[in-house]
Structure formats: structure tokens, C-alpha cells
Image 1 (tube, rainbow, N blue to C red):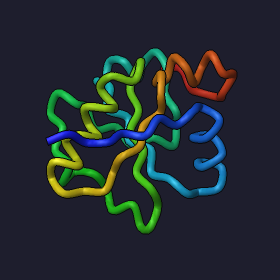
Image 2 (cartoon, helix red, strand yellow; image 1 turned 60 degrees about the vertical axis):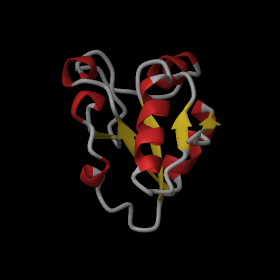
Image 3 (cartoon, rainbow, N blue to C red; image 1 turned 90 degrees about the vertical axis):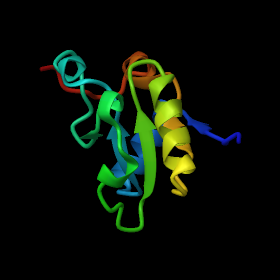
Image 4 (cartoon, one colour; image 1 turned 90 degrees about the horizontal axis):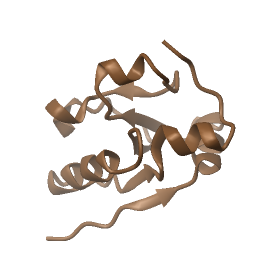
Length: 107
């Protein structure tokens, strides 16, 4: 079965975060967060990803992110395979986010 994953730009994600419209789920591993992280993101590492661990988005859209945009697509596909309507990710991941000049924290 194939799933559809929609690419969102850093600007799309930043605007949605500012408007409190999304729950951002970072599927990178904990050691990766030491380099750069988006403070609003919830960390659920892909290595032990279980869609049932995603917090209740309370009406918000769920958007996945990772380092470069590969694992976030995988997380979306896994969530969709479990019947969840989570089909968006930050295209290019934290790398694209930083390149676009968006704010992030280190360490």
C-alpha cells in the first residue's frame, strides 16, 4: 500500500507553529537533539517509533520532522499504516529549517 506524504516548507511549519496549528514531532535520536532542536517539537525517535506514543494533537495537524526529511516521511507512512491521518512533514528537516534562517536551539 502506498501512502501520500505532503512536503511542508520551513516557512509553512514556522507559520503553523506561530499560529498553534500543528503538533511537531521530531523523530531524530536524542543525541541529534544536542546539535539543534526546535523547542516546540516533541521527540519520538524513529528507532523506537510507535504511533500510539504521539500525544493527542488536540485538533492540531501532526507534522513530522527529522534531520534531512527521510525519516520524517517514514514516520508519516508508519502512522498512516496505523490508520492515523498524519501525512505532513518538514521537507529537508532541521537542515532546511536552519538554511531558511528559522530559529532553533543548540544543546
